[in-house]
Length: 118
Image (cartoon, rainbow, N blue to C red; front, side):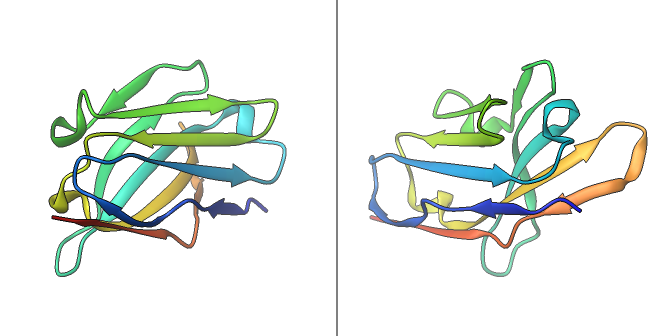
């Protein structure tokens, strides 16, 4: 069983930065793709960034150039560094672990709230 724990959320001013760690338990972290999603009030959950087991990264257009996803396999942790934050980045941010070809391997954290004030 995989457990994911996000932290690092809080209140930040527009233009500021915050880093969100996601700590994973279990032995599958190194072979998993890790994703960050977010969900704003009244909106659907959306994909923000992904990092593959090999370290390849992808970003949603709204966060390109501002957010950076990285992984530390020695610590079983993925980080989402968020810079130049905007009020529209306000959301609950969720960490997700998945393995390609194994649809049952799809785990979520409990989420962490990030609020950006203008």
